[in-house]
Image: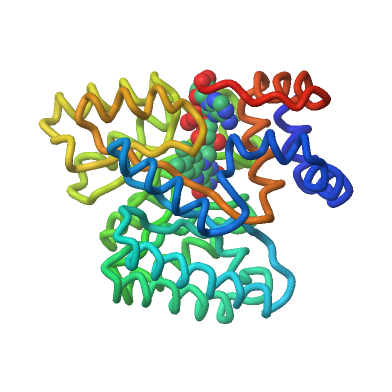
Length: 309
Ligand SMILES: Cc1cc2nc3c(=O)[nH]c(=O)nc-3n(C[C@H](O)[C@H](O)[C@H](O)COP(=O)(O)OP(=O)(O)OC[C@H]3O[C@@H](n4cnc5c(N)ncnc54)[C@H](O)[C@@H]3O)c2cc1C
């Protein structure tokens, strides 16, 4: 109920204005978003690299309504890729197709994606296409298939809560596409998605067992120790070595677990978002964990720093 409410509120432009203009909420959001510009995000990448982890930079933004905004987003991604190369840091980029203008037309958006993936390929880097709400699943997969036919520098995300995901995974494996497996962060109806944590977790494990033996380098993006333990157990049983896949977690969430995995010799990538448009991302993080919301509410007027995870 609370999760559904928060995900619904993530669409409210009034709440967005109120939250993003308030200094206490901006401080709270900095737990999940290291800064509004590329420079602090690169600093966060350096810190992750020093801690033995790679990173993925996400310039926050979604559902742009003008071509200018989409082209600006595209330029920010090529700039991020160039900065990563110039600074010699270990990071790739993650983006959302609605940030590159998917709502403005598939051909237009495909062209923006082609430019970003092309630049990533030239720089021997990689672009991960995030998965958004189910209204975009089909189009996102279609565009990823197209982009992957032209370049190996692109991969995507599959959400374990969708019933369709096993079939989508098999099609993506058929074209050698790298996949990030997640549970899924949007509000979806039971017609198309598992609703209970138990069912989503069971499907995550089922899909993980298809991905890991595929011989393609995939990512398991979760903070759930049970999912991580299941993956480690399965990899050991199947003789899948630690360099054949990676774990991914979000900036500011379960840093203790990130470090524990690094100490155990696993590859860990931290997803580092930056930018001014942090409101929907912030709301999805609150929705994932009621304790975040309680903490947020308690500290809203006090302005204290959030606890380390
Ligand atoms: C690198 C990365 C990329 C992602 N990309 C996408 C994407 O493209 N599309 C998409 O739909 N979703 C994406 N997600 C979000 C994902 O779908 C889940 O919503 C999110 O990861 C929470 O699920 P969980 O697997 O961590 O497990 P959960 O069952 O939600 O949580 C397990 C435990 O993890 C911890 N935890 C989880 N979330 C939080 C939080 N916000 N704050 C503090 N602790 C928390 C808590 O200890 C919790 O008990 C991504 C997640 C990661 C890590």
